[in-house]
Image (cartoon, rainbow, N blue to C red; front, side):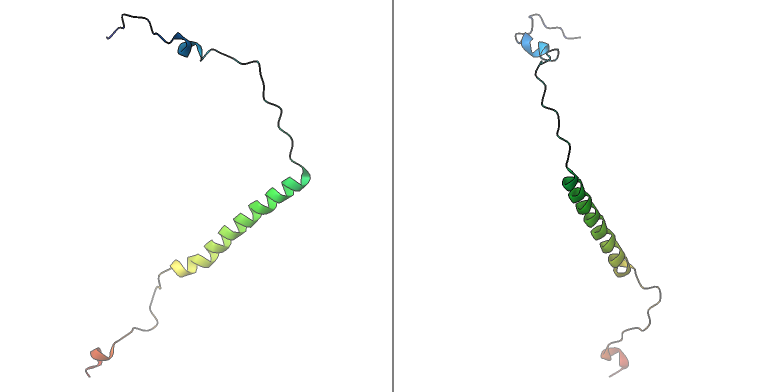
Length: 79
C-alpha cells in the first residue's frame, strides 16, 4: 500500500513500549478496622437510601387502575 521512504525520526517513541522501570511503588497499606467499618456503614446507608426511595416512589409512579370518582366541572352540569 503506502510505504515511507525515510526512517521514523522519533525512534525513542517506538522504544518506549519496551522500556521497563526498576522503580516500584510502595506496597499498599491495609485498611484498619475502623476504616472497614466506616466503608461498610457508608455502603449500607447508600443501599438503604436507594431501597427506601424505591419503596416510597413506586406507589407514586403507579397509575390508578380504576378511578374511584370522576371529576366534573360545573359547566358540564348544565348550569
